[in-house]
Length: 218
Image 1 (tube, rainbow, N blue to C red):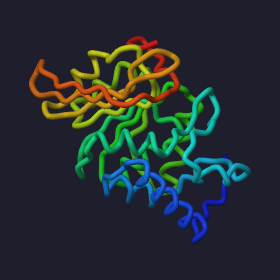
Image 2: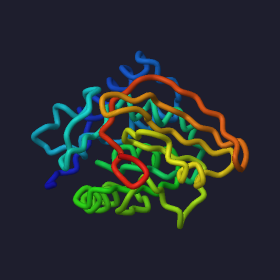
Image 3: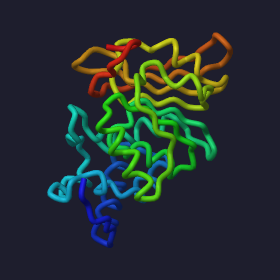
Image 4: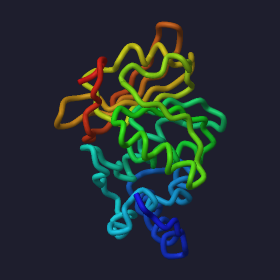
């Protein structure tokens, strides 16, 4: 995407309003809100659609995918309880916006995308705007075993079930956040790994994500 990377008072003011809106919707984690306030979401949009960048909505990014609604990004990130230095696996790089939020919070991010065009675009754009992650192209439903274990795993697409292979890639004390359900809606699920084969599961609010496609998913 051709883009002039400009971030001035107008964009910064729009982010502040977005943060205020997210607070009203129940996002409380200070680190998450600070990251939302810093990451220029308009960089992930064609200039033609800049006026959509700081609305609390999802937006198409091509290849049948979307940049997630800011509330959804904040909600999932808040559930991860990111600590600086956490090793995080992100399944579904998409636009890279969620990746940048995690990086802004001090995480070390390994991110995997199934769509090759999105993978190629994002691995070029993010370093250009100052964010460095480890990028992979492949089936995210299987995780990235070669770099496991991870302190946190976030899945940004809806899965029919929780892939066991992902639980195996968590450290003890690690957290997996994943939307689980059918093609119409999913429940956000958090799983805390309390022992080698012991887990604490919580089922939370309803969302709608694009499907997680792969060997261990749809």
